Length: 340
Image 1 (cartoon, rainbow, N blue to C red):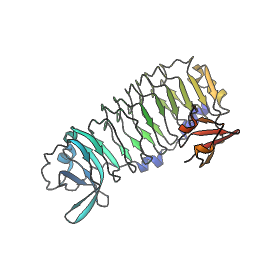
Image 2 (cartoon, rainbow, N blue to C red):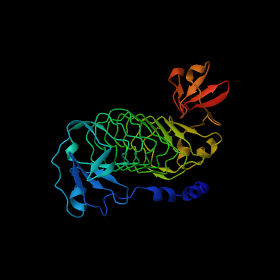
Image 3 (cartoon, helix red, strand yellow):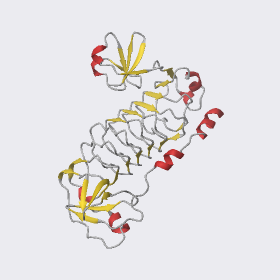
Image 4 (cartoon, one colour):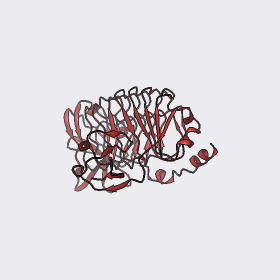
């Protein structure tokens, strides 16, 4: 018990703290209008701007003489520009702060230059986030009507609090590289059935996946960090995959889960420690993962016969042709991770 607490205390947040994006709206220079958009130069950047149509930040924090807000609404399909040339200077559109001007937008295309998304985004049925995006600010896509699979890019480092709460997301594919998920970020998503958290995660906010009533499979990152009410109100969870060798402290995170039926999958050689650990000892089915010493190779699925295929979380796939990057092939007693 004491060894777990000591390990938690050694987690070093300094690298993430130093890399977190700073507030782009402090000490802002004058904004400008160009075409149908309003822009604000980002302090400290090299010719980067934030698109701010209708944004309160435009009214409050912009210094010096400023143009009037453009009275523009964006209906239907909208494509955000990647660059804008103003007074002979080419600016890169690196951030966007959504406002009510976009409330009638039904389809949205982001340029690859976007690093940060904030404000209240339009209610979309599908969302494609660009590679290069680093942060999604709090509440950006909350109470939306997203119904498709959500695939955050590998460049994403921060998902703000309440960011995707009260949606209809059915599946999320988190990429390695994500460092922080804020409180309530994916709470109240009744269609969500699987939440596989990447090992790169350093911080997970309170009630992150709270009240996801149909959530069945959960994978926790390898860090043995303290987490509070992560999956509160999720009674349908039947499988929890733990990547950490030292049992993580997950206070009140699985109170609604049936501990007699739920299977806990832990790293090889760690089952006994989990059975004796605070909170985890209440679960009756703690098993060790068969997947270990995985070799990464580039192997086409067509070359594999008489084999078994497992997802990286240990779930078996019946159809060999459905194997994807990151899946595990067991062939001739050898474990292979597909890297195609």
